[in-house]
Image (cartoon, rainbow, N blue to C red):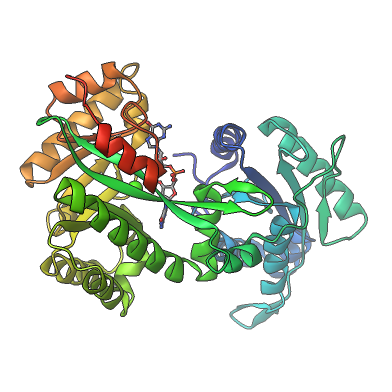
Amino acid sequence: MGSDQLTKLEGRLSFLNTLEEKVNYANKHKVKAGLLLIDIDHFQRINYQYGYEVGDKILIKFAELLSSVKRKQDHLARIGDNTFALLLMGIMNTGHAELAARKVLRSLEVPFTYQDYQIRLECSIAISICPTHARDSRHLMVEAESVLHETKIHSNNIGIAKVVGEEELSEFWDIEMAMSQALKFNEFSVYYQPKIDIQNNRVSGAEALLRWKHQSRGFVSPEVFIPIAEQSGMIKPITAWVINTSLRQAAKWSDKWGHQTVSVNIPPEFLLMPDFFDMVSNSLKLWESENVSLTLEIIERSFVSQVDRTIGALEKLRERGVKISIDDFGTGYSSLSYFEKLPVDEIKIDQAFIFHLLKNKSSRNIVKIIRDLGRAFDLQIVAEGVENSQVLKYLHKIECDIVQGYFYSKPIPNEKYMEWLSKVELPKI
Ligand code: C2E
Ligand code: CA
């Protein structure tokens, strides 16, 4: 699949496609992407001095080192003999890309050891940012390549593309710092998006989606701040806050409209945290209500590693009455061998398949396969990203259980959601 034989990273051609796709995504969602080109200095000299075999080993180790700097939403590739590309998704400013570059340089301070050799590597790193330096992938790459050339000539370690035209406003904004204040300053809130049981045409619950309104910047997308919160550890108090807030608010809804289910997103790594069960259990105790159930939506990525521990954690949560949903199903790493062992209640088909449902036969096939898989394991099947009635009708016809999407409602604040519940009349499908 276009991967580089030696390092197993994505290769140049495949990366150029990824770059185009991700830059389009960044433009559409108004997030920033940073391209780092990382070139090992004097690599030919290493090959001559130690031989190609050592050269190859160094490339493999270097790839491993870059993989440790890469976050899960980033993309890493080997695009030339001794040149690598790291695409950082959802950064706030050039400073963040520079931090990643410095991290690479710092990790090179420890020499590579191979057999009796101790080899100290140096590299040059060029940075270009979309949309600050270029709005399309081709120019972004050209910018980075020309900066890399300059950086090499001047024997610098890091080079950054120059801003043309408008100044970069968000340059010195430190999202991590601002986030640590956000809980204190009450800048977070939970929005809710209804989940509709389309076979019985009734509201089945709501998904809680976190919103952050920064005092001067306005709303910051969760796609931007959640990954940073995950990296910095802030995600733990934030998640506890989301669980507590949504259980408290759902208890209020249930006073008026009977039983309610609220779904909260959980980073998959939480399942392996020793105190996660207590965190959930304490919140349930605090807002104890027979009329409120909690569902945890967890993306697949955790389930592959440490399967037994993951299963144990899921079982314990289910015994406590918590329902488990596998989020963004279909794009992760599912394998049937562990899927059959997973104690879960629901699968949510990734939005990407739903968006392309009408145009794309293979998306329809995938959706049907996931439906069959869900049926075979007695799971509830949820489709999210339903934006129009044709898609809804199709999902109804193939007997999908629950849908969610702009067709019914965007995620809305608590008061608006209560208003929505009080007035809701679901259209006949
Ligand atoms: P997700 O869990 O896949 O959430 C669904 C996203 O799709 C939400 O984006 C929602 O607003 C959006 N969406 C729903 N229906 C439609 C539709 O019909 N069309 C389109 N185009 N989009 C739709 P949002 O709120 O921006 O959240 C993005 C992601 O951020 C979430 O993806 C989730 O992974 C993460 N997130 C949000 N809140 C939390 C949270 O409290 N904790 C954690 N860990 N992650 C969260
Ligand atoms: Ca979700």
